Length: 333
Ligand SMILES: [Zn+2]
View 1 (cartoon, rainbow, N blue to C red):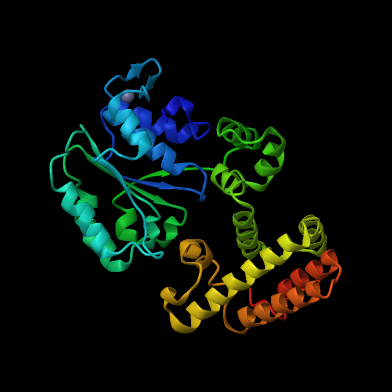
View 2: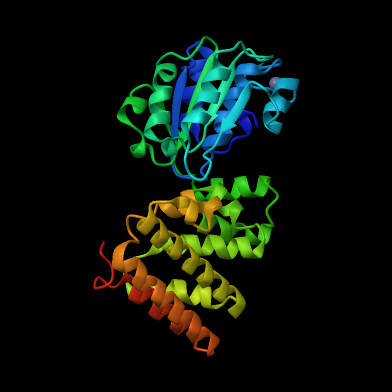
């Protein structure tokens, strides 16, 4: 996707296009900003700009259609690659592989680009192995670290990167992104409103129904504690309108996530958790859901599920659950 086709992120685009124009594209960048906002797309656009065989000059951009542009878009370019955490951790072996590749000449590109996704999940040994290369990447090689929690990165990493910050998109911008992705026009308003400026979040909600329920449960972890009963009621009302099977499914997922947090707290071992594919997202709430509070929450969700089985009023049952989860007596925050 060329820069012109990226909606929003004007300041990031300006910084990167300006750097390219003046032949000053940094060796190491840190793209930081909320999850799902569009950081990876911009990273791939920069890789295209660097390697395009048919660049336009006014406006400056990659063509999006030449061989390197297509390969990068399809994720099959040998010199433009993304590294993601395995089981929520970027391990030293993964970073070593990146370093081995970086030590070689690019296969076919002018510029090699390594995108390190969820860079904040690097453990200390991985981060330390990376320091020297981050300081001085080989000529014509670029490393882009991507993170929604840059504060979790070591200061020695941060000081070696040129920072580019991404902000949430405006509501009209999110709608535009969703429309270009072929989202059902009837769902645009609803999804954009739920997205918090992050089109990636909105798009994740239009997957299968079960996946939606799961995402909904994840978002509940982020909503607790609710600030006031009015917002609890408003949310409970929306959720209660769903069929009872969906509500039960959301609560089951919520129970499963809480269980994973309790297991991880007790064991320190995320291989014992169930939701490994989402562990990175779940583990963010580990500081809040811990100790007797997380155990109390598990009991409350279980009780609510029992109540729904006995045909309890959905809205009242959900309201009661969310209010209890938000009570200071239970909640250490
Ligand atoms: Zn091109």
